[in-house]
Structures are given as C-alpha cells and as structure tokens.
Image (cartoon, rainbow, N blue to C red):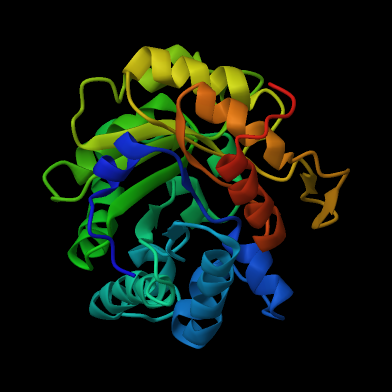
Length: 307
C-alpha cells in the first residue's frame, strides 16, 4: 500500500528491506536484456514484465522497491528515436509501475526512483571507473532533466546509486537540489575506496549536513567487507545507512557471463543494522529468495559473520 509515513520517519523507527537486482529477476522471467538500454527498454516494450518483477520482490518482503530507470536517460532513448516528451512519459511510467506493484500488499511499501551514474548511459562499464573527463557542472547538467522528470512522477525517494566517484556525487546532489524529493546517496566501492580510488570518508562527507539526503551508503559491490563501510558512513554523516551489495559473483565482460560463487549471506544483515544500516537489500544477482531470507534475518535479529 502507499506509505502513510515518509521514508525518513520509517528509518527512524527501524530497518527496512530493499529489493534485489531488477535485471536478474527480469531475466528469470524470460526477458532478453542484451541491449544498451538494459532493463529500461522494457519500460516501452514490456512494462508488465517490470511490474511483475517488482511484485516478486514485494512478495519476498521488500518494503522499498527501486524503479527501472537506472539506465533510462534522455540521451539513451533519443538514440532510439524517442522524443524528450516520450522519455518523460517513460520515466514517469517507471514510478507508476513500481507503485502499482507496491500497492498489492497490506503493508507500507516505498518507491525509490533510480538515478544511475553517467557511465550507465554510456553502457560501456565506465560507471565502475568514474572520472569521465567531465566537470561537476557538466555532470549536473546531464543528471538534472532526468532527476526532475522522476521527481515529478511522485516517488518517495530518489536513489542516487552506483556512484563511482566524489565528483559525480557532488554533481548529483546539485542536480536534485530543490526537486522536492528526498534522496539517498550510494557509492559503488572496491577495496574500501570508491571505484575511482578515493577515500570513503571523503566520499561520505559530501552528504554530511545535507538535509535532503536521508541515507548514505554503498551498493553494487562485493558483500565481503561491507560492514566497515556501513560503520564509516554512519560515523562520518550521522545519517541512516543504505547498503545493497551484489551476490559476490564477478562479471566477465569478455565472456559476458558471471563467474565464481555467490557470497551474499543474509545473516550478515543483523550486524549491518547494528552498525547503522536502515535500508538493506541486494543488487546484481540477488533475487527474491535471498531478499526473503534477508527479511527473515532482520526480523529475527539472527547474525552471521560481521564482515
């Protein structure tokens, strides 16, 4: 159902379960995502599949669902001949589909509109490197129209996610300033640093003192070592922490396939919550079964390894 509380109010009351990876659930439903627009293509070609994927996570216990707008941009859709007005409608549809799925249960479910990094539009993996050669002003100019269109559709929060470096974080916060919707800021990290190699304390500090930011943390990263990032984000910003790592498998770009074993352990969630995490879920390759186990672990307070 539509929430009666703001997300900030809910975070003060306890920890909420996020959904998992949208693309892996769409693939499990038989969707072909071999496209530069990735899951965003289905906003036009298969919206019923997106709603079904959201619903699968809601049934699994997710109380925050993230829209299929991560890779949806005016530039990306323009390459397919979609007009700016048509892109605005598709961005709005991403919020509507998530809201429709959220209203299927008799519990509060919040909708997070995904605002992915500039590199996601390039579809070349550069969101895992950052440092695109653009200034903060240029990046803010890129992000603002999409952020404004998503905000106008009425989500509960904008998810500024998979951010690879501090420059893009600053640009995103400029782009959403004044949009009237709260945001969370989430970096993709590796080895205790941003993907661009910056200190995480520096990265998290960008959000400190910004009242529009209701949570700060990490996503689309290896679940090993997430615990220290949670504690650092809480210590630097004093804000609730958001955390949603990948399964632990590694993407082989050359072979276009996943390698290795999954290391996502839902029992870690209780320790992440102890460290300050108030939004906990999964990213790539984390599907509804793992989200259901995560919800159960948080409900029971069962704790596994601390890392």
